[in-house]
Length: 185
Image (cartoon, rainbow, N blue to C red):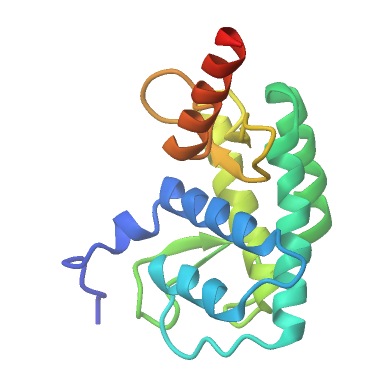
C-alpha cells in the first residue's frame, strides 16, 4: 500500500524542515541539563510520532550530537562549514539508504545505521544530511551563530534575501536598541 501524500509529510520532512528541526534541537540541547519534555516537544513539532520516552542516555547522546553540529554553525565560510560537515559525516554516518519506515512514510534517505538507530545517531546523521544538501544547493554555509553577544543560539542563514544575522527578532531588536543607546550616550 502506498503511503498517502495528502498530509504535509513532504513539507514537514523537507531538507529545510529537517534543518529547522536541527536548529531547534541544537538550541534546546545546548543547556547543560536539557528538559526532556522540551526536546520531545520539538521532535513532535517536527513530525515524530509514537512513544518519545527519552532516557537520560538518549538526552546525553542527543546533546553530544548537538554540540558536534554546533561546529558547523560556528564555522567560518563555506569551506569551513564543508570541512566541519565532512568531519561529522566521516565520524557518524552510515551508508546512504532509502527507507519508508515499513510503508508508513514516503521513501526518503537516511544515513543512520537502521530505522531503529539510537536518537543521537539518528539526529547527527539526519542533520548532517540536511545541512550538506543546503550547503551543496546554495554554495554557502547553511547557518551561523546569532550575532547577539548575549545569545548562544544557532540559526539558519539561508532563504530569500540576505543571510540572517540574528536567531530572532527579539535578538535583533535588543541589539539595535543597545546600539542606539551607545550612539546617544
